[in-house]
Length: 223
Image (cartoon, rainbow, N blue to C red; front, top):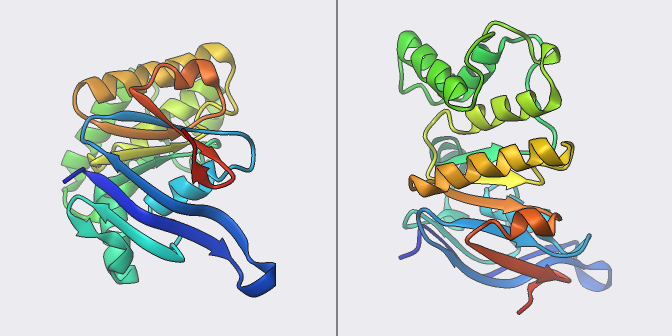
């Protein structure tokens, strides 16, 4: 079975004549180590689909399987545990906590999961920052970094719990082309070593660098 698979995944806002379909009848399968782009015009349901895949929203109908579990049927507590332990998230805005250092920001997911001791968490956070080109200044605050550097810290935080799947929603939307390419270079390196990456992007040049594209039109897979 695919690492992530959906069958008839649908999300509709409201009921009756005021119903607004966000995504409809999505059937897809993503294998371990794939780097996949979700593309489509504005309003096509790209982010809505990603939020469903990441258990940040609940489907109206259909099934979502993650690592062999029918995630849509798990309790809220079970979904939260699965999300924390097996999924990592990168958003258009970095959402780093300004009062914490870079190291502390990256350690937050590990603290929530509670699998590692303090020294092990610190060592992993340090290694992730170094891997992403932030060799020094781990005690800096986010406002001391450039936008590209902050997004790399956000990627390190998303990788903190060694997730099976990294989900990114327009991760280059607030970056210039150079820093946007740096982010996609990181994703390519991660995928090359077996990390599954699913990203929403409106940038055709960046989307072309992934293994394949899932193109949405009016909430449905097109082509």
